[in-house]
Length: 154
Image (tube, rainbow, N blue to C red; front, top):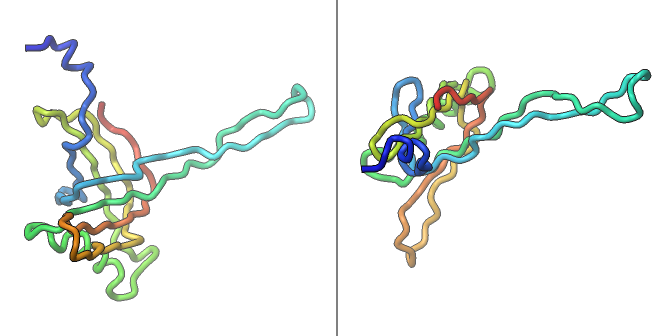
C-alpha cells in the first residue's frame, strides 16, 4: 500500500466528476471552459519612470460547455433546462439562473477539488450529429454563461 505522502501527491484523474445545480445532479460526460482571466491595461503618470505600469482590469469568465451522451436515464436533462429558459421567450434577466458546483473526485471518491459557478444559464443547445455509418454514442451539449467561477476546495 503506498504511503500517504505518495498518494496525496499523485495526480487526480479527470474522469470522475460531478456537477450539481442547486443540489440536483446534472449528468454529463464532459465539462469544458472552466476558466477565468483578467484584462490588463497600461497606465503612466507624468512623474513615473519612463515606462508603462501594467494594471489589473476586469475579470472575464469563459462559457462552460456541458456534453452528455444521451441515455434513457438522462434523455431530457440538458434540453429541459434550455427549454425552461427560452420556451416563453424569457431571456436576459428572466432566464432561469442556477448556481453550479463542479466536484472532482479521486479513485476512492474522495473530493479533491471543487468549483462554484455563479448564476449560470444556457445560451446555446447543440443536439447530436446523426450518421448511419457510425456507432458512436449520440451526444448533446449545452453552453452556459455565468457571472463568476471560484475554486472553493483543495
